[in-house]
Length: 181
Image (cartoon, rainbow, N blue to C red; front, side, top):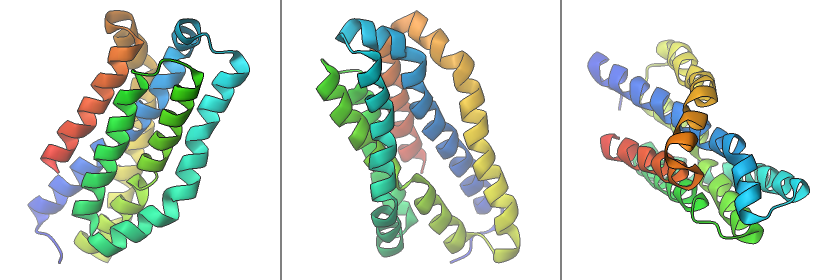
């Protein structure tokens, strides 16, 4: 079912912020890495594994997440996906050692794996074919905006409230997005 003009603008706007959020959540750990290593006694090598494990979870679950979006529809799928990854983003702030951070970051990657397949399905379902390129351009620009904003916002938040609460705030942002979605 295609949407009206106003509904399409709302959809594209929500999915733009969806993508901004994915990159803010991803970059938060980089901004906090020195503090995390210090607080949890994590070596640089283990921190590298923690960074990389996200990509493994993400890669392994993109295809199943695409199936979920196709099977249950983008509205339900993206709600579940964003709730999952936002929960694991927030739980990153609760890590107590390297192993717990490794598990949480893997699960964060698993949860976020459906972000792009779910959004792509939403565009396919609700945006006319002749407008999908423009809509995808806006959507994908959200990743760059999120990355750029994070360069300034994450260090500021970490300094203001600490690295643990910064992860929680990023998780809450995703839950707010789900409420709007």
